[in-house]
Image 1: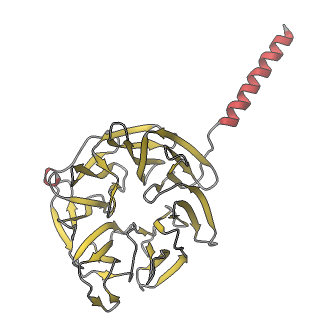
Image 2 (image 1 turned 120 degrees about the vertical axis):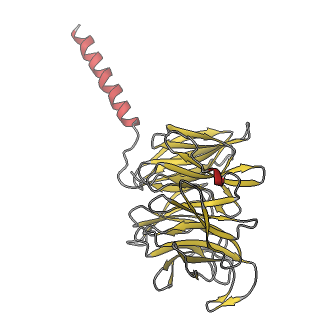
Image 3 (image 1 turned 30 degrees about the vertical axis):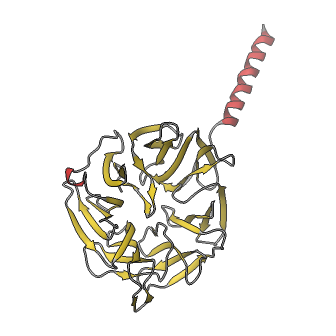
Length: 350
């Protein structure tokens, strides 16, 4: 019987080794979630990486993934999942193992022609997203744990998109109006709406509240071709004090792409261009207004959707359909994955 015991022990050790070899990699540091389209164009994969380890956590067919927003307090991601067969979109909150913690039923949209439409509150307890009723867009707010809607009644029929939470989660910045020409602030929980600015005249998009709460950055496309002290008015990034005041233009030209604040609120990462169709990755100094090109783009690979890591040491961005991460310390660029579109990646805490 002795050899049987030895054989049994050998089998146990072998299975244990196989199990350890197949175990998921451990992460150390901020987690970058991303969704990529397979080369066959029929399936999507959701990944998580910390730059050292990379984990595939979801693989879906006959569905599309997009509009990723990482949690600011946990290794979780809110993601739009569109069922092609049922033609229904839902907002799922998944953890680093791919498990669904809560799911909000559609119709929900992840993005339109003017930017991302999903936002996680700073404390991680709420999700703001755009609800679609035909061509009408309105804002909905839900509890991130239960999925229960907590939208103020005043907002149910108001045309809104592009929400961004204030530091204390008591205010939301958004754009509204027939042409989304008004940048507004919404007070919670009552839903009262007040104008922040209508300058410049024309469409506005993608407001982003600074981490220190002092500023709201936004993209604008002026109706006219007038000029200012900084040159002709065209698509550009603007900055306005969060408590009101005169806005100022930060960039002379900017591609329609989300901006990202550095954690210390001193810089804004944006996709910028000047006199050409080439889009670069730029850092704008908020105090001086100086612009530094940190990654040069190319005609066939527009740079979009820059996103600072939570510690401010890295910037993730897409160039064409390739997800890259720039190390701001040594300038090294790491290629993470192909098949990644804008709005299909986001940092989270770990």
